[in-house]
Image 1 (cartoon, rainbow, N blue to C red):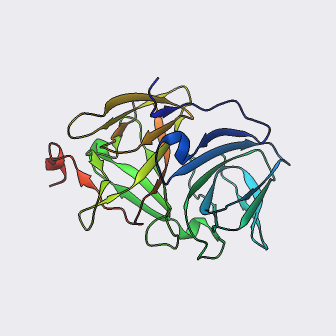
Image 2 (image 1 turned 90 degrees about the vertical axis):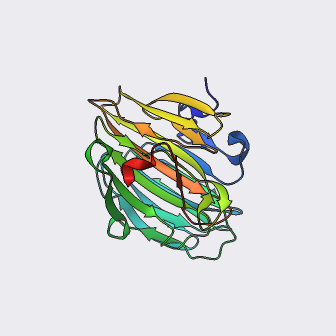
Length: 265
């Protein structure tokens, strides 16, 4: 199996099904975990030298960070529903969570110094936009874009309708060449509706030294260390993915594959 395709494990004692670190991914910045928690189960983590964005994929939980209790957040039944709630926890702090219902959470991390306060990111602070046209249409929820406070993290949800393409035309962000392109590592956490489906994602470079086409099942993570990375949802299956990006500079500047850029002209 490709090293870029990470399958979920059975939940450990803390409910964790994904544990992607910079060391396991072979890169520098992005960390990503997913937990499936039962009602009443709790988590507590020290952030160390990394900031964290905890995204409520489904369910409700009481959350806190530092010395603050932010109360109960969440409420959607699945990530395919709108209105995501998230918690931002700075570096050198502690965050905690107690599940009020069965819930699924994603923990997105990246290097930071702890310059910002903890805060809740409610649905009314999540920017919504539709990109593309025709079968390239997809719906974006900007949880932690570069216009909102964070030190390294960029976090976004995308809903790709059945039969549509996303991250398309193919683009990349693997060179520190601002203002034209930024260097950002990226993870895709894929969910399918119905869950028996799959998504197709290609990760490739201009010289084809990396060129892999992956079939991602419900719950899989695709690692994008470099290169273009389009993804498609087959007919009959709606695709959700959660993107986490981070790099040396917190800005998203991408470069389209010249062979396919004609379609955005």
